Length: 224
Image (cartoon, rainbow, N blue to C red; front, side):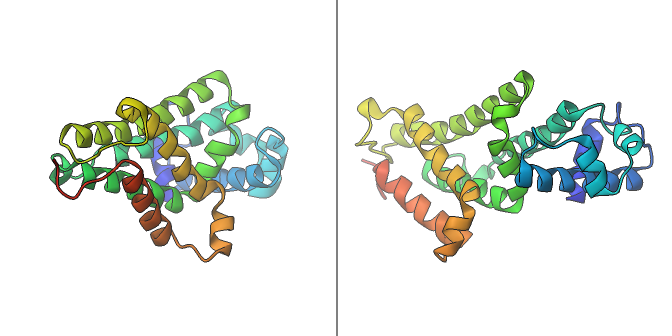
């Protein structure tokens, strides 16, 4: 939490009025952690700043030292989620550049474990999307499209190299395939409790998801 809030401080240093990093990061962690908890309990739209002061132990004046309203707080949290996704998924290992099958596995597994590590953040971004202001909705949509394009690029590379047959999609539509894969990644963090009740661990979910996707796209061990 503190490492992520340090990133928020970096992004918003010009508007956050607390200049001592240790104090600013600690309070941001309290603010974000409390916001995620309240949003999960009652919804961000229904959460008031008074709720946030009561639960975080910070005064209203202290809150306003970090943001000027709920929309700004929302964009701080959402911006950090989007930034981490872009930073992590946007830089696959160089060794995977010429191996689209391995790159696809890496994207699926890394996405899943990233959402497991930042579970409350991703649930917030997904569940609260309906109440985002326009700039928040646009940011969320662009992030989702970015992830889908990474998956589609790996699929297209695999088709070009003869590794993926894409037998179940008309004309080998990699964009549609990526759009179908994305909800299966989201299902892990949105419905994690359901999977946990079934004894499904993150490792098992990743393993089964990769196997399912490779079967669906007609993965061949050797290209034709």
